[in-house]
Image (cartoon, rainbow, N blue to C red):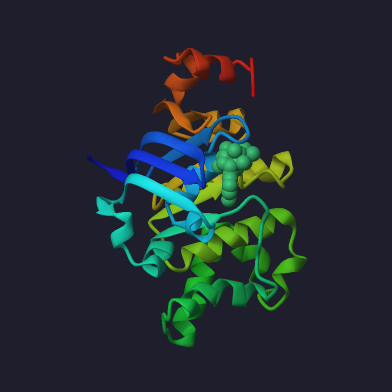
Length: 251
Ligand SMILES: Nc1ncnc2c1ncn2[C@@H]1O[C@H](COP(=O)(O)OP(=O)(O)OP(=O)(O)O)[C@@H](O)[C@H]1O
Ligand SMILES: [Mg+2]
């Protein structure tokens, strides 16, 4: 398929006996923002976690079907390489309890990327600039990341992914700990970042999905009920369940 950064076919996931993802056929287009929406427990995070094999940490997980990352079968990609190519940002900003600078170079270190000090500093500068933190933090690189505001922490978590040049960024409810203004600014950042990255975001917030995403998938009880261009999903959904959800009749 053309331009699919992520593609699944007949994807099923079981937590023990519980069937959490059911025959999911899904595509995340390159350099677009795709949103996953649906009520709590429908499997949004489970689906997202398939794409950097984060579900592997749970016992008794069984996955069948196919997941391809840029046409490459996911299980054929070395896990360290995969996590480098597919970065993830979580609900609660989770910077390491280190300085801003050490957060920024952590990825380079664990991936064994050896650079001259000046090259390293250049990467820190450019990645902090990409998330609009450089001007605020350039004289504070030594302070603990835990001292930053929640919004800055989340920006830092995005910036530290960029240092290792991922292709895809997964965001699981990245704004749920943020106030409306910070949320709006992170949304603007996502739109900026899609020039260079492919973005998949899980959100509870339908307005957010409508504002930022190019494509939207609606999930219910482990199924991908509908997938399409965001404008179509929100204005003329094909499935009655999608319509009920977006008009607030359940969820
Ligand atoms: N590690 C796990 N072991 C067993 N069951 C799990 C595990 N993680 C999730 N589940 C179950 O799988 C289903 C889907 O969960 P998931 O967290 O993917 O939903 P979600 O759509 O992200 O929900 P929310 O909007 O609340 O974050 C739920 O019924 C959940 O209880
Ligand atoms: Mg979730």
